[in-house]
Length: 312
Image (cartoon, rainbow, N blue to C red):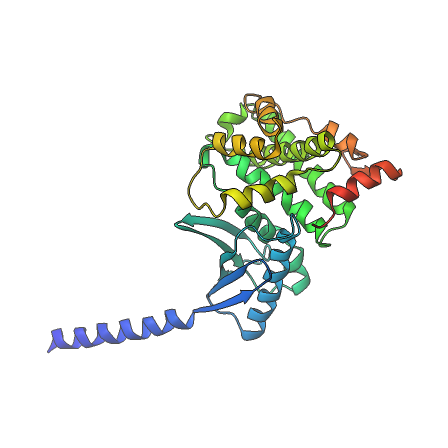
């Protein structure tokens, strides 16, 4: 009898647990001009919260699409996990790549719509989809691209002002410089050692700023990081596999018909110093100090910044 009782109890527990799991998970889809978002909610969200987060996700996706006019993948998987953190509205995000790529964002919908819209995490994670993952050992490249565009793409789509975008880049570079001074290690080894997070993220962002500016200078603004990434999408995405950094850089050089990507890579990969971004800032008419950045209002500099931040 006891055995029968425990079997029945176990069945009841399993049944009601399955109901709770199903109740905490729901699915939806959002059709946009250049992508279809396959959306999963995990945890409790009210219907009004779900709608707010769907609108937010559309805006963040469109921000990334402003980089070259279309989102990099025609089908995008996104999972929103209910967060109860009160420190920030989107305390964690990641890309999961196995057979397909999925963006996972932990979100606390109790924050206001304005606070959630102001968070950079979604644009950062979605920007990872512009290129394949190059592996943990070269995370500066993947994280640098996302850190660059979390500011530039948001400015392109009107989520940040010009001043805010360059101010945030500058402060990121300052954090990276401080990390590099305190922990001098070759960039090629930084991803393999603890304590180099700011160096990894912002060295990569400085690399992509320099690449972007050099492509524009060489082509008289006929080519940019944006346009080369679009060519990469047309030839080489979707790609959910780990792809060597060397092959990605070689392909980007080939598509741009330059050696900009490999040349900038050689400048920084064995250095213990933070990449020099001052030449790129000077080209854009940006001067800086510990308090922040000043933007030169002369027409030539303003035009260069406008071109960089123009939505495509």
